[in-house]
Length: 412
Ligand SMILES: Cc1ncc(COP(=O)(O)O)c(C=O)c1O
Image (cartoon, rainbow, N blue to C red):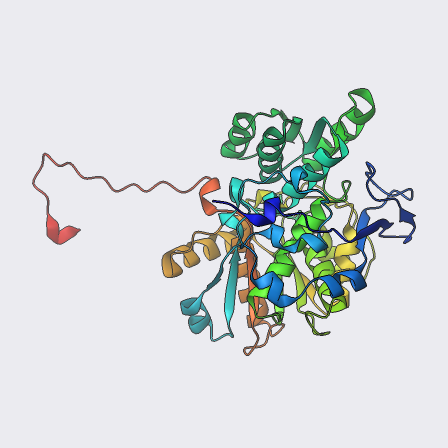
């Protein structure tokens, strides 16, 4: 089906890139990794120009995918868009669980519907489209699985070579999908930051482009669309609170940026959701730094959790995550693997919603925060289920039936 978002030339209002720490300006339309100060770069737009060029009504008439927000995205030419069908993900209400808990409206944004089964598609479709625009021929990345899968898929579609490194215990399905989608993928006996060191060293030795979280300026612009989409789906409003499973934190930082841009173009007011960074108890550097009032979050040693996507011992955007959480009057919260597992089972059994462990962590955190009073019972909360639960090892179902024997129907 024809999608005019992918073919119509619409202006991007990018003006420059800005160091997230020093605010120093860097030129747009050039290959960049970190800023000259060694910090993530943020894309800046002529928001007054967007305000004049874009109306809510015009947006509403466009096809329902993330490319509808082109004026607020960095890709300038339609021919550089590498799309696999980035649908608007649904908001699913967990009515039964909300009623059972006696809480307010409980909504899940289900990112598992995106290409490659996770929200990593949002970031990587943008990074790969920009890589295509800038003539990059080889991309490398450390990954806990989902980001690598999205990079492999989009880069293969764009004809770009990829080399990917993941911790050796990354779920089998992730490693297989990465390989099948055309990347050279290596299991490494270490964690994601150890993989990141290999990518950083290979940058000069092999000449590949380092596509690590926040060392590349455009993944965050893709993740930003979660915030744009959410506000539009809520009738240009924001929820009271957002629970985000936080690893590298791109999505949390991206949504925070989205809300500021939406206010600047007059689409929403100054109300903001409280941003809650959810981590696993076995890997909670942001929670520790938040509670200690620190600006940066030192490495978490011996990181362990079943929620592999958020097993990120150290994040280069730590100060941006903590800044967004604090500015929003939110908080950072850790949940145990047992609580994650219980939350996953509860949502699947009672709502028919099979979350990924990282998504289930947000539900576990919501329950904890409702119980300890950090979330009020009249508040509207949005949880992010960032990947399909089908990408993860599932517990075996053991009941069998021998059709050649008489069946005792009273026991079924
Ligand atoms: C399923 C899942 N949830 C959450 C995350 C963390 O995302 P972010 O890097 O935006 O914090 C990841 C990242 O690997 C993931 O795969």
